[in-house]
Image (cartoon, rainbow, N blue to C red; front, side):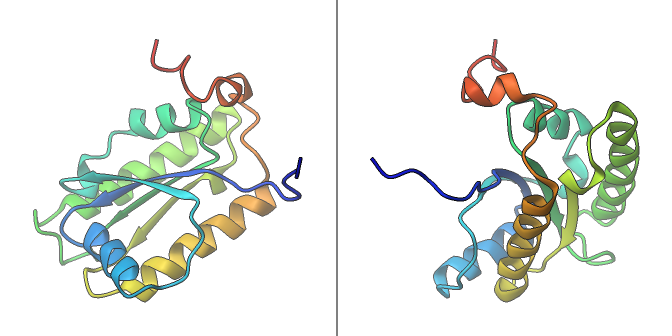
Length: 151
């Protein structure tokens, strides 16, 4: 039986349907190489990502959370990405107070035409989380593959 020699972080990504999700789609259709560590959840706007979604992702055993939206000033809903930026800054500070490393929460701005940037962002987030290490704060959830978190 072959054992995995290196730990790979698991990332949940909340991607804006108008820009970042389209950028991820472009990266895929263009066959850009990037780590397969991110599990994508499409949201109407990055500003709609509730801080509780971030916490639940970490509680379910994900090692990091990526929130990605339109570039500031180009939001389909005018100010959603500004709200997302503020929410993620506050969420990082709050979770840091709780003992969660701030590197576990990342925000990025990727447009629909930036498949290369999306691939680079996922690679950067993955590399940073490899340096940070596994999410040990909610380790019991990882062992159950998130089944306990849904109860």
